[in-house]
Length: 165
Image (tube, rainbow, N blue to C red; front, side, top):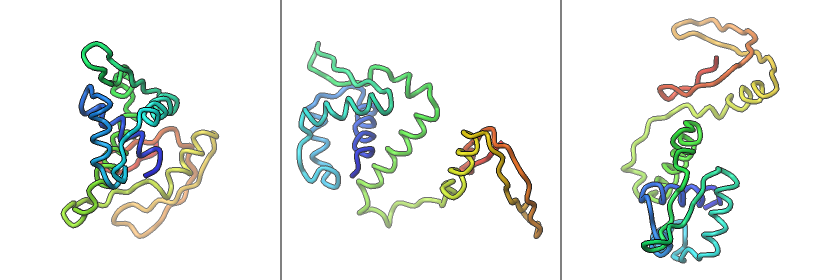
């Protein structure tokens, strides 16, 4: 498990529970043999992850000291109001959940979704650099391709397909 997976596991676990003690977090972590190898989540490790999560995602994990030292996300609006951040965290969380349950791979059915892996990077780089890119397009039910320049303004994921405007 890489660091990003660990961070998203922690964020997702706290988001799902609302508030959780370090002991309960550590118990959940150690039960997840695929990620933890049965080891507990040490407080120093947890605190390093909290700091890294704040630096990388701007998500603050605070401690409620009254009533039992419970950890919670103190700025959930930063996730809920940022659709891209929410989508990204949710996608990583689903990936973690699937990774935790690979023994069920024959019973988890998914559709193939265009990932955007092949062309998304090129389009996003062109958007950042304000560059023109040439694309080749073939309409459905047509045999002829059309190549033309575009100046990509934005991309949108809709109905499991990437679109460029």
